[in-house]
Amino acid sequence: MAALAAGTRRPWVGLGAAVWVQIAAGNAFTFPLYSHSLKSVLGFNQKQLTMLGVANDIGENFGLIPGFLSKKHPPWLILLIGALACFFGYGIIWLTVSSTILPLPYWMLWIALCVAANSSAWFTTAVIVTNIKNFPLQRGIVAGILKGYAGLGAAVFTEIYRVLLGNSSSRLLLFLALGIPVLCFASMFFVRPCTPAPNEDPAESGRLDFIQVSSLVLGFYVLSTAIVDDNISLSAPIANTLFVVMVLLLMAPLAIPVKMTLYPTPAGELGMLGQAVGSPGSLNDEGGTAGITEPLLEPSGVVGSPGSLNDEEGTADITEPLLEPSGVVGSSGRLNEGHDSSDVPLLVAEGEGGVKEKRKLGEDFKFSEAVVTVDFWLLFFVFFFGVGSGVTVLNNLAQIGIAQGFDDTTFLLSLFGVGNFVGRLGGGFVSELFVRSKTIPRTVWMTCTQIIMFATYLLFASAINATFYPATGILGACYGVQFSVMISTVSELFGLKDIGTFYNFMALGNPLGALLFSGLLAGYVYDNEAAKQQGIHLHGTNVTCVGPNCFRLTFLVLAAVCFVGSILSIVLSLRIKPFYQNLFAGGSVGVLPDTNQQDQGAASAS
Image 1 (tube, rainbow, N blue to C red):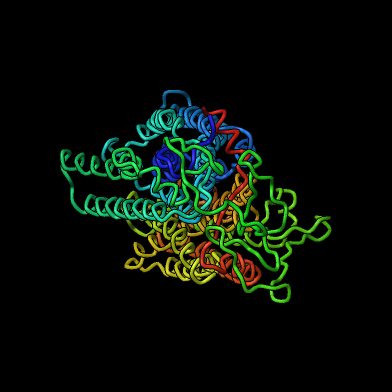
Image 2 (image 1 turned 60 degrees about the horizontal axis):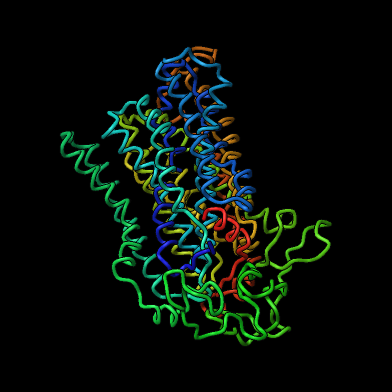
């Protein structure tokens, strides 16, 4: 069966299913919900616990293998492997925490947690790679939506933990081991590759706006219910009713394909919009022939976006560089005029002694070609400093709250999770809006948020209780922006062909930051201060640290890290600014990515 066009119902069903998969991918954010049980049941100190947090982050972000496999294999296989990792990893941890088996050696538990959290990498790779290729004209928004729901997963799992599981760590781990695989098995058939529409469709933007609005409503609803539950003891019927409403809001994205089924767009209108077209003159999968009012390519234009055309679409691959002195295709095949060879920089991404043939930003880079470029490593380190510092707070959130004198640390996770969600969603939307209207590089928003993170860490270090809740939410939002902006940026600079590999390599900045800033710094500082307070000299004892000094030095170091990250982000933004000025010179861009992998995946899935 041929790949389906983006104007049909199928990609929207896939996007709705991907939302649920991304909620499941938020399982790695649940570590603070059961970390205290690992510490109390197994007698770990804070450094041992933070190293388990590092295992959680390594597993969550080590996606190079699913990234490579996503190039040749269909999404359902990637989701299946992730479901199995979730089942075996969390299953082993549940057996240990519930005392069903004798406590496992520390190294074995570390590996089990790494495997369990690695399911997130498989889930995210499958849905991100598939959907930004299905909706390449809206890649920033789609990436923000999907990463946003993953961030919201922390708040959703917290509500499940409170309402359905009675604040039981053991029950939560069992739910993760069984419930998530069942969800993925139910969703994997719907997450399928489609041939993207060659032109922008106004209806597509409206549908994505609906998903963003409904997700924002969901995020604030979850936050509101968490605040109410934190201050008022709700009866079981009321709590269950609120939970059912949350589930219904999670299903909102599926309203789009339902509407398209009940009120289908006439075939003639589809053709005029230039959507639902697999190739010139091809039949629409929904029935009827989609009319074409513009040629797929101008006679002498160059597609103004990453990627190339597939031979199976009836057109040979385009090998000309993206940014020629003239004739860059903008939206719907229009040429962006006004550029000649004297005022358009060549924008060559050169590595020192690495690439023999110079490539230009925006072309489909191979991974070996991208890793020898300056821009690739600048983006990596900017992302590393942003998410590495943020994940340190996330992994130690329960202990930070206790040290500050807060009893209910589950609310902190909900607050951070909703902030993370808003940041991921807003990062995709805002960066897409300004890059199209003002040609502002997306990385400018990484700069802004890391400056805010710098100030937020200083607030944490000051240990002012009145600022603790706002600072947690703000930090979660800034942390979330890094993800959605990074995905869109790397896809535009280096193309969509190897996006799974690029994205997952960049994501390694998260566990690397957790290892350095959480495992080696925060854990050591905490245990050292706890030992001083208890008057002991051995760090193997499970002791609790209380007071601002438990994490003050850690917060000051994280502030310095984000300051350096913001400087690097400014440098990167200045370097790639000419690229974005030319790519989006007409206010929008036509995107025709390489769809070889999509067609293979579609054939396998069909």
